[in-house]
Image 1 (cartoon, rainbow, N blue to C red):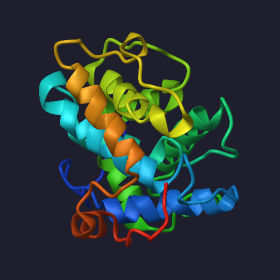
Image 2 (cartoon, helix red, strand yellow):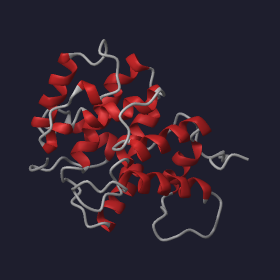
Image 3 (cartoon, rainbow, N blue to C red):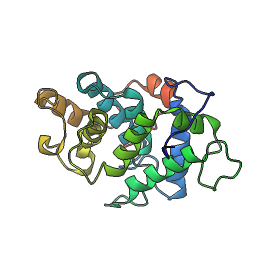
Length: 216
């Protein structure tokens, strides 16, 4: 049996409770003493989500994987610098959650929240492999042939303005017919305005948080 293959009758393939996934991700942020609204925190995750969902209809990416990547890809950072292992740590954690399904014995960093566990277990083998690979490689690989993984990379890199780097199409693995200058400029504008561009009510409905007055 493939190590990623798990069965669940508790959540459909299409269902995802993002507020539960976000709460779990923020538990890890707190565990590592990172600021939830720092440069690699919630505002960045929301912009990555937006970027990915904006690109997905054109790239053919799986929107569910994109949404889960946005929440989890930086959730295991231990600092705001390079921290090259943060992606692999997130991927390894997701894998352990999936493999621990049904077990009564879970380590302290695995979620008590049943909705988070169910969402990860409900992923198909292909979706899980995409999420795992995207988290693992999002800072170490430039290109990927899988359109969902490539879209995750692109969604993250379109928000590089927050660390003082202009998104460069050379490092964004999306066809230039999709990754137009307008797409890049609009992504930069969203970065520069923190979350002032977004619908605060939609943000709260989706992630269960209010946008603070001061955020990055």
